[in-house]
Length: 452
Image 1 (cartoon, rainbow, N blue to C red):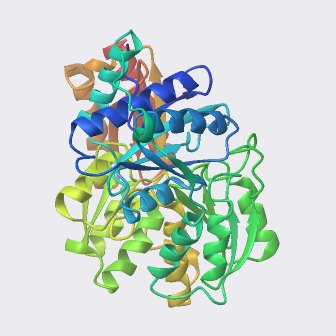
Image 2 (tube, one colour):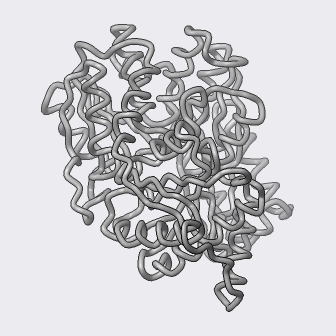
């Protein structure tokens, strides 16, 4: 069996890859593994279960609940809420386990299953591997030890979660948003109620799009992966700016009053300076990935801040932050982690914090985001090559060295093997877009020659 857990849980086409049987079996396995690890010792275990609005989430939720309750775990069903809300509630309610059903920014046919440990943190890799192993053992015939009678788990709706999460968001803001007009694009996803409610309670005038989920329209031409509607709405309504989330609202991108995109790097730059002013940016350090724009790194260094870069993936950002106590980190894609107030990327929290900075300074988002200049970035995927030899090819190393000499201090080269496909990603940044394209093209040819 291939590894089920990726960097963000188990994900695939619902009812094809991610079936009810798989969701049930993994939930039973998770309950047993956590019990064996001592997580439930001395008390009756409880799990918080939430989902995004996908139609498939309805039957997958039922499968997860059946698996947990049949294993003696009491279940609190919080319904449709963002991933960071489920993480927050898992922590604040003292639950032993959290489960989120979502495929994030993926199209509607997909879904995903993510387990969270006590406190709302991602499960350790070792526990995920153990869950897979024990799931496979029992899938092929080994019987489960099942409770009976009063030992089975009980299931109840927990409708208070919505207000608890919104109150948490409002409670951590440094100032209100009165006087701001903001357009929110919720991608017909998990934050369709939460985000407008939070922004409104914080004092903003809110205009919404993408807030009518029907189970089928999540991420469909809207949200953080399709900013066209948001750009048009911001300009049409004369709004101060716009915020876009993805299906499970763990990411946030923005649009300034002119309709220009403000990406995750720019958002982190704005938040980093705001947090430093409040003495909330520990060690004056921001954690980002190697894919962050060079302009972000140059801007933060110019402001006297330290940038630590990790491998691509918000899980690696979070690991670095937790290991050293850093307060802010994230990705260009809009996964921003404010660790004092969230255990994962939280798109609504990020958008609110960005809005508080606009409100408190009286400066436009466009002006605030101009603290960094995005250097032109060209990405080319080179397919059908031996990605495993990226780091060992002398021919490729020579080509990269030549490119780096040509670009100098105002450019950057990154060659990254795909984690899932037989291809290599070539990324080049330069002060001039034509130069970036030229260098990227030559490097792509070098990759084909050396690894093809």
